[in-house]
Amino acid sequence: MVVFVIIIAIIAIIIVVKVSSKRNKEKLSGYYKSAAEHERNGNYDQAINDYNKALQLDSDPNYTRYKERGDLYRKTGNYDQAIADYNQAISSAKNYIEKQDNQYEKARKAAAELGKDGWGNFYYDRSKENRSITEYKRNIAECLSLRGEMNDKNGNKTQAMADYDEAIKSFKNLGTDEDLISCADVNIKKGNKEQALEIYNKLIWEFNKDFKEDTTDFLKLYSLCQICVKAGDYDKAIANLETLLKFNQDNVQDYDDVKVLKDTQAKAREELDAVKKMTAASS
Image (cartoon, rainbow, N blue to C red; front, top):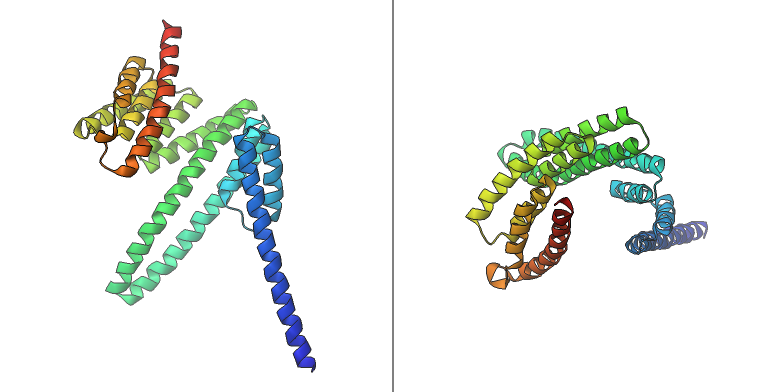
């Protein structure tokens, strides 16, 4: 009888724990959704309040949650809190990378013991993990850049320059076109306009060459337009934006690309108006 009662009690505890866990997950999801909705509507203080509730409840928050709240603090001018959240995001992302590196080393040793078949699986699994690690490294670089901006606004120039330098190095090491654009953007923040222009102009040359080889790549053309604006070459930006707006569904090869094209053209129209205003203001 005693054993039966103990078993019933254990089952009851398990059920309570599971129900409680499910409710917590639902509350957590609700807070994050509510925060996103408030942010979309420009209600930053309410969004921060929802993030605070969510992060108190979240036992293992993704580093992006701290970055998102940090961005809200940045928008409300609370730079110290923004820096604290960017620090937490950087620390969490670095911990993840370290954990993956440790798992990688264990997997490498196990694969070596298994021989040829083991190495084949090892390289396949590592290639998938590399994509995740690259994204974490990219977000660390973004947080470093944003932390530098906050330190700059707080008057901490020395720390700001150190943050910018680390962000520039990180983006350079990642090396994609997107990362090089970010690298140039950080150089602008740092006051290195000449270095930024050198990167922009190099990318403009490469993007021009790529677009000539594939004149249906409207996303590449849009990226070229944006870089031209950053480089201050407004005439070239206007010409490329106008070319982009002439695209139609016959210029794309995939049905799914039609929606992407329309969305890109909507952004291009707004950007074209903005560039023309900048051109008029500077003349």
